[in-house]
Amino acid sequence: DSGVTQTPKHLITATGQRVTLRCSPRSGDLSVYWYQQSLDQGLQFLIQYYNGEERAKGNILERFSAQQFPDLHSELNLSSLELGDSALYFCASTPTGTGNTEAFFGQGTRLTVV
Amino acid sequence: LAKTTQPISMDSYEGQEVNITCSHNNIATNDYITWYQQFPSQGPRFIIQGYKTKVKNEVASLFIPADRKSSTLSLPRVSLSDTAVYYCLPPRSSNTGKLIFGQGTTLQVKP
Image (tube, rainbow over the protein chains, first blue to last red):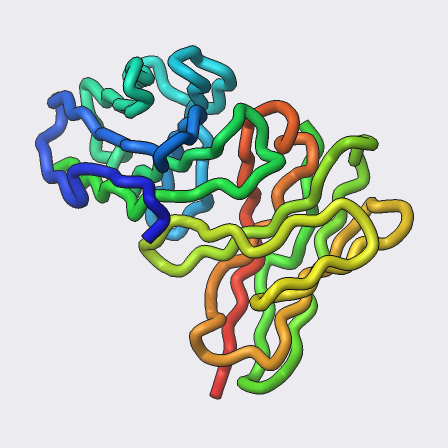
């Protein structure tokens, strides 16, 4: 158990809909990272938050947004969903805002858009 | 952001030692070198991190030459359960906050 909790584990929704994925970091970790992994693809870095503020941005679509709340949990919002958004979405947490420490990953949310 | 180069895939047999080398030419003085392992449908798991020379833990060893422009992850006596994707993270990512994962090396361990 990494200590990072992602909910829900599975999500099936229709095209055009909006969903929210939730991530609770390890206790004490200030930084949260979001990734997208499509079938047989690599991990695509989406965005990072540190202590409530956006710190780094990757290839995140405009239809996607995220935020980190005062209790440090984070949510990834995906809107106007398309079939191609079907993927595993992972979040990870670290104590600081850099990658010089071990990052702990959650078990992911598998999103299926039909 | 510096990129890394590592083999796309490798095959091995149970009981063998596996060495996966990653090149990272654009490494800065304060960069660390980090490796992760990922099993299908699971989140990546940190394996090892080092700065120079050799680092060893219960899972793997990491060899870093003096120029630090490459690193070699060594897995001793692999088993079928070591079949996974192994990622070498670009050193610059450790300071920018962008934990960027490349395509990784898919290791297939055969019986």
